[in-house]
Each structure stands twice: as C-alpha cells, then as structure tokens.
Image 1 (tube, rainbow, N blue to C red):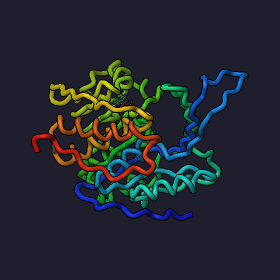
Image 2: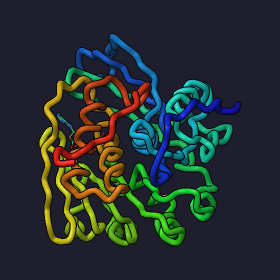
Image 3: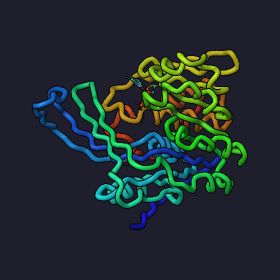
Length: 305
Ligand SMILES: Nc1ncnc2c1ncn2[C@@H]1O[C@H](COP(=O)(O)OP(=O)(O)OP(=O)(O)O)[C@@H](O)[C@H]1O
Ligand SMILES: [Mg+2]
C-alpha cells in the first residue's frame, strides 16, 4: 500500500518532526453504564479515527500553518487503509512513517464513553516508531522534535541526545503509563529536552521522584478546565482555560501542545504560549474525536500585538 498525500496548506517557520505511537481509536459512544464482567452493554455509536499524541499534535500544528513530519508506524491491516487516508488528508508529511510489520496485532484503543466519563483499553503492538528515526533526525531536515509519549522516549532513550546533536529543540508530552511513571530515572531520561508537557495527574506522579522543575528547563502542567501552568527559571506562570461547551475531551492536551509549541517556536513569551495552547485546546474540545477534519486555524495573537 502507498499513502496518497493530501495537499498541505501554505506552511511557514520552523519545521517540526512529531514522533510516537499511532493508534486506531474505536470510540463506542452512549454506553448506559461501564461494562461489568459477565454482562453486556450496548453502544449507540461507533467511530473509528486515528489517535495518539504525536499524530494529534502534528495535525493541529499543520492546521496552524507549520510544516510537520510524522514518524510513526501505521497500525496493521485491516485498519491501515482508513488510518492512512485520515493521515494523508491532514496535510502532514508522512514520508517518515512506515507500515507496521506483517504479523503484528493492530495497535488499537477502544474508548468506552459513558456520559462525561470514558474508559480505555489499549493494545500496544510492536515498536513505537520506525527504526530509521535516528537517521531521519541526523539528516537535519527538521528544527524541532516533539515526542508524543514519554514511553516512546523510554523505548528509544537516545533520541533526545541525537536531536540536540542535530541542533534541534525538543519537547516531550508525558501521557499516562503506570510503569514508565514508576521509574526512578526519568530526570536522566529527559536530559536535554527543552519543554516537558505533563497533565496534572502525571505531574503529581512525577513529583514523587523529583521536583517538577528538575525534569526540563520549561515544564508546562495542563490542568483541564483550570488552565495550565508553566514552570521556568524559578517562576510560575498560570493562564486560564477558555470557557467552552465540551463536546469531547479526546486530544485536548495534544491540541494544547500544538498551540503552545507553535508560539514557543516563534519565541513568544510564556503567557502568549499558554494562551495559544488554551485556544487550540478549546477547538479540540468543541468537536468530536481527535483531529480528523481539523480546519485551518488562525494563529494566536496576543491582544497587544
Ligand atoms: N473542561 C474543560 N474546559 C475548558 N478547557 C479545558 C477543559 N478540559 C481541558 N481544557 C483545556 O485543554 C488543556 C489540556 O487539557 P488537559 O489538562 O485535560 O490535558 P490532558 O489531560 O493531557 O489531555 P489528554 O487527555 O488529551 O491527554 C487545558 O489546559 C485547557 O486549556
Ligand atoms: Mg495528555
């Protein structure tokens, strides 16, 4: 199979490479209750979309006008076709992607939606990213590396150092992973990363090992409807979330990353970066699903500009 590439919007500025696991999300909506062992519950809706932080952040960065590549493995058949079509339509450069090796289970997340609550079951399968990611970084075609899950960095621990050697800046989202968050060496694992973006629950788990500020020169803690806080050079900057009628929280944190990083890569101050993150997150919150069909977004401008 080949991937038919969509037409990217007009792109500008620093080029970003997003790396991390790509999932096929099967979202079962309208469940009356959580499933109970030995019983059955029935969903009202079923949607199938691409998921995973690297892809969602990449799609929103493209929507903001950035040139973005994605280094990920496209889940195995029978899901490869629809997932590849969604990726191609997003305008992301898919040249760094590869198809999952034959014989692997498809990498799937089943999301069970019960009112405001949701539960996930995920089958991770095979490696997180194509094995040629280090070569791609060394080739020097990108200015910034964004790693969608700390677990991907744990799997390829030298990619931050390789990116720094290629004069790239680096950001890392955390994403919940009990085993990874229990590790005592996460400060060392993140050494060299410029921006680290956990959510509040992840930050609490990380703070058991070391003060948050030890993880990166700039740590941004996303805190749902309470907004987000940046920790840098001994200072804290808090900015609120935007009031929004929430349709679906899937991908809010990854969309926030895109808005924040887009302005950070342009050298904006932390207030502007946090506000841009909140604005792009609010777009994700007001629509169904991860990033499928995201429209071109106007770039954030501070009121004073
Ligand atoms: N209920 C909400 N109302 C308004 N804004 C919200 C709400 N939930 C999330 N946001 C916005 O989205 C941002 C990121 O959300 P959150 O803190 O939930 O990240 P996350 O837990 O990493 O998300 P994800 O589940 O996508 O990984 C917040 O900083 C805020 O701007
Ligand atoms: Mg998150």
